[in-house]
Image (cartoon, rainbow, N blue to C red):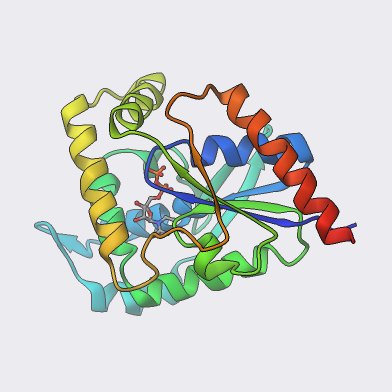
Length: 230
Ligand code: CDP
């Protein structure tokens, strides 16, 4: 049995990755954080000096794309992303990457490269992937699609807690501003904007604990699995 494809989309910091990881671990599926791939390309652009004085040189980044190699590795049970052989999992979650990832993710050529790689990763099925366009563009045929939302206040607090745990302090107003700006770019861009797929099921997890959201999704996965087998 190969298992189904589960697509989880939604706004920044609403718990998509947490949900995706919970599902992957409960069902023994492979988890892919597509946002990490956009973040790693953004880090590459910063390292190569393709973003100078706040300006992103799109044409140069497009030219560089064949030189960007991304890989996920499982290190002691934790998925980590490698950029051209270097572990960048921690670096992509802080600093300037936060400000430039959404602009980088608007570039068509960047998306084409990553979508191709994301589809290749799902060839064997039994995968849960989270992002912005997974149910609409990457896997329109996914057997189960979830669209996650939560209030801006709760999302800000969750991102604050996540960063604090890693020893990174960021002012809550700054976090909230960054989330709002990313939401604006992600939903209004021309290439694969964030939107709910028609057949996606909405999860508003503002008032749900992690355990509650897992309990919410388990029967949906079971149902989608049994449908796929019949
Ligand atoms: O963790 P968070 O939800 O804040 O962000 P993420 O999932 O790591 O994604 C970072 C950024 O990458 C998003 O704000 C989008 O601009 C972009 N992205 C995208 O365009 N398409 C995806 N499938 C995943 C992320």
